[in-house]
Length: 416
Image (cartoon, rainbow, N blue to C red; front, side, top):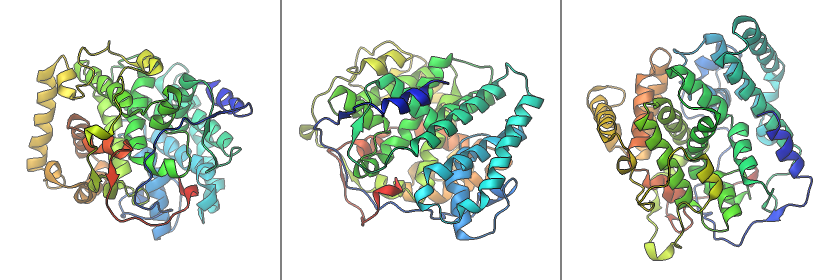
């Protein structure tokens, strides 16, 4: 990871390429600033960062501190490491959201101190060759990337550096999803997959965020969206190529017992749905399916860089995106799906999740966050189910030929 943030930012000091002339979806619900969805996450933040019980700080706890806390199992990992990684997530947000951070600078000094304590804890209490050190390094690489990003203007003409693989590796670093993927893998043990596999799983996970976010990112001319920069480098619409890659990664995970790969992707998707700021629940409930005649024919394996990261050989039926069909171990897929459906029948907090609309799922996700303080079973079940079931609406969200039909409004592209 060490050189990637520096190299990607240095690339921006050289002439950049213009984005190809491709249609992009921009119809979407309005983007908010910090808006509190509920009250379930302030407790986690105030264990480490003392802040008042106000709507603004509930929103910060959900959006920034909660970005890490909602995506990891706080009961399986070292408690000090959980506090530390969540503190880094909050620390990173001072740069990422500096243009609408409001009262957040009041906590900057104590947040920085908590990051120092995290570094000291890992060096003191964990081995030099342990996963905790590798995870901490990944979190600090995200800090380096995000603070370097401040040097580049937002919401200007869409241009791109020339190295797609470097950009992919940069995206999983600057989103901290590489760090979170390493944590999810560490939860499960024994470790499965090398560094390239971690990058592939992290990339597939961040797609669940970027697919929802793409319409807002398009309005803001935001380059660091997996679907946008894949399209930029291939010159064709990227939904089918990215979908093919994700389907293969998740099939690999099911066949190899790597449930952590499903957990991290599903957790990021439902966190994205939960955030009131993003309004992803409204987006996903108000999309029309693309008409086949409106979509250009694209080779799903047409991106050689994605192919190089793909843990599976090409599918003999590349246009078949059904996850179960791609699995070798279909019995394991069926068993996992059955376990999810059984859970939804009997769990008071999750009951009916499988039949609910996306907006109806929001309180069920919040109930899983409440339960997560002591047990991540509900969170893991919802997350796993989210990846096992057809994700058509997710891909519609990224597809420029699908239309958004819900409420909309004016908003600043700086809110991306």
